[in-house]
Length: 343
Image 1 (cartoon, rainbow, N blue to C red):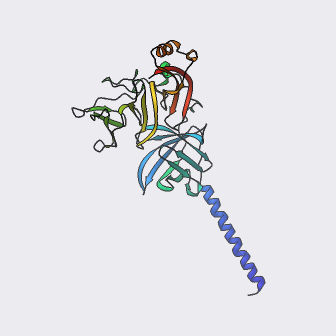
Image 2: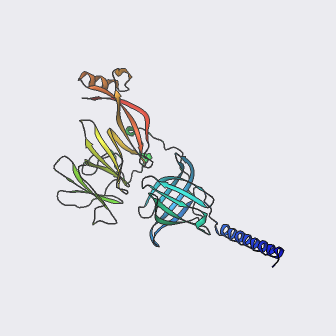
Image 3: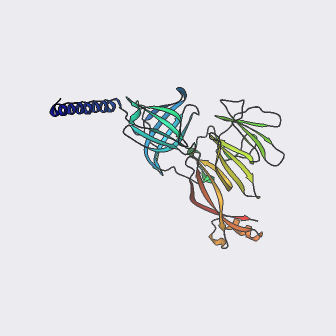
């Protein structure tokens, strides 16, 4: 075979390969028809070795967050909505759940029609697979950029649903709890136990004889084996969706408030806090915390109480009101402060 003929054969083979690659890439892009629209629910399903584990929907927004944009997730298993953050584009998504320390990632490499297939990654390992189908769904009103935060003591009822929450921070059996905690339904425990039945969890509480309580948390889907047991952690202080509150006393007026994520079994916030303590707009809990000592009580907005405390020989301290975001774990001062007496 002459060199010219060989050259022509090589050119023909190369041209054929290029055409095949082009056709294959074109078919791949033609197959991927994923369209993510703002404020439209996008169904998803989670799998583990081919077995369906959970389902729900995402709603993608353009509301800015510290590490991306706000993405709302609804889970059929929990029946709850949570706020996540992430980014998305044509044929790809990356969503981060900081509470569970996982990311949902998918791109056009795994795309079939209007469905993206991706992975849920924890600690660098693929734990689950998921499919996200961008079938158009009912549009919903986008969330506001900022949730208004009134003072806890002046919290208007319209900020929270009245049904299902408790006002004035007490359960039916006079147990003090975080104001606007979820209202429990009646349930039965042993004679020395108190039982509180919530939408997703049941909590059984009994004294341990040392000033604390043994707190047993059961997932309502598995009422036989405790989901988590607290010992030497203080007292049960209420619940809001999957957030459980604990309290332990330090002085006459100060307590340690701990916020616990019941789903992930992790403590997400622990701080010295004083009343009033209340839940604001579902995702926030607000409280007063000590800032610094005050020598000149004329700066106090509540001068009469500060004067009485100083006259009684107490130290006068400045307390500021802060809000803790139970979704992204940020702490933000509200600008409200007061003075209080301390030994």
